[in-house]
Image (cartoon, rainbow, N blue to C red; front, side, top):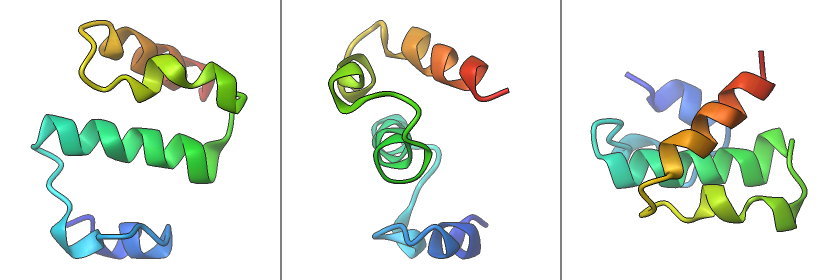
Amino acid sequence: MFRRKLTALDYHNPSGFNCKDETEFRNFIVWLEDQKIRHYKIEDRGNLRNIHSSDWPKFFEKLKNTRT
């Protein structure tokens, strides 16, 4: 479903992406911020990079809200 869009973004594994895998989804968001969005300075992305943190959803929401 997402393969064509991920390919257009030059994602490294568009055919193997599983949006239902929470870890893979979080890694994708980090990749998207690092490679395409670049809203935050590199040093300010630490909380987003900590994909196993229980606070990760809070930082993801913050990222989403800055993009609207």
